[in-house]
Length: 96
Image 1: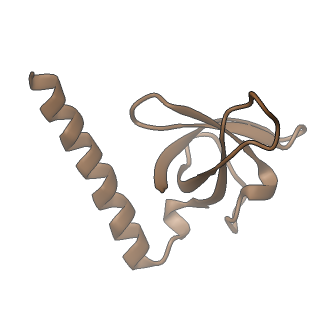
Image 2: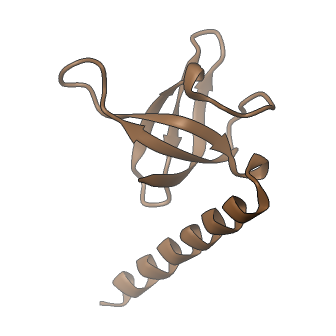
Image 3: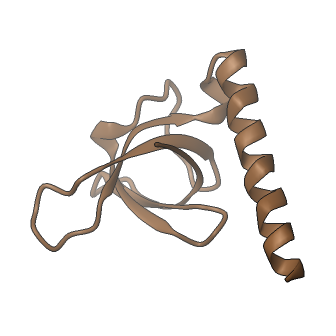
């Protein structure tokens, strides 16, 4: 499943960081899973998928990380529509 998040932290010297989704979920990523052309920076919105962790008792990690700005136009529109749908859903849940 494709998810949308923002780079919350990135440790260049260690080669890893964390992504944060709109709902507060956070995911670990390694730079080897970053598919962008430009260097990764804190605050960048990205699209990614989840893969099972390689080590038992570790959380899933983000893979296939692509900055939304670097997606083809059709994928960018889909990512934006998905993000808007999540925001609308959150607003509906807040009303109840």
